[in-house]
Structures are given as structure tokens and as C-alpha cells.
Image 1 (cartoon, helix red, strand yellow):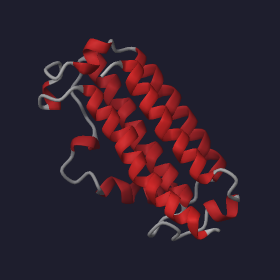
Image 2 (cartoon, helix red, strand yellow; image 1 turned 135 degrees about the horizontal axis):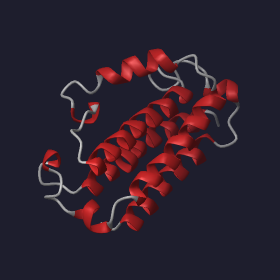
Image 3 (spheres, helix red, strand yellow; image 1 turned 180 degrees about the vertical axis):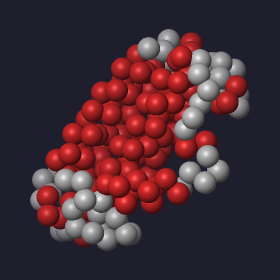
Image 4 (tube, rainbow, N blue to C red; image 1 turned 120 degrees about the vertical axis):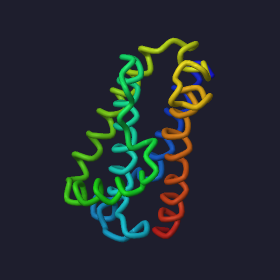
Length: 159
């Protein structure tokens, strides 16, 4: 998959996320236990934190460094709880700024890779014969789409 195709897909998923929360009051976005135990703001923070991990991974990959990321950890779900505890009191405005900043960093990191580097299933042994572009799509489209479905269900309850 070309870098441009990756960027188009991750941009579309993020647009869907913002469309799901557009026009909703800060009070409702920050209301606890809206989506399971989380507020909508917590879901946005969650997406941003995993995307930040992807930014770190892309930096490490480009440098040829050892990959140090919970993305591949067997117990990766434990990070959700820790990040929720760290960010549950973070203001919505800061969470939205984080999302924008992390996305800008992600695009910058992606642009450091050629299409061939992103699409070569053998380039990074830790990817186990999968292209790096698939990891980006999984984390930024698959993961975000999963949560977008939850956001849309929640949004329908507001009507």
C-alpha cells in the first residue's frame, strides 16, 4: 500500500471520529461511564496514546533501533488502564490538542518512509512478514473504526 493510500485512510478514520463528536457539549464528552467505564474524552485520549506509541515505533524503525513498544506486548491491554488513570482528569481541550499534535507527528514520521519501506513485508523482522503499512492501518484505521462504532452508538442515544 502506498504512503498516500495510508494517509488517505487514516485521515478518513480521524474525520469519522471528529464527525461523531461534532457539536456535542464538553459536558457530555467528559461524562464518565458513557462508553463502558470511559467518557468520550477518555476514548479520544486512548486513541491518541496508542497513536503516540506508533509514532515512537516509527521513529525507532527508521533509526534501525530495537523496538520498545507496548504495541507488541502480550499484555498490551494493561496500558489502557494506566493511560486512563493518568489522563482521566486531563481537560478536553488538552486531549484534543494532543490528538492534533500526535497526528502531526505521525504524518511527519510516515513521510520519512518511502512507499517501498512501508510496503516491504521483509524489511522489519519484528513485523513477522507483514508490511509496516499494515500496522499503521491496523492502529489508525482498524482501532479507530472500532471506537468510532461505539461513539456512533453513543451519539444515537443523544437524539
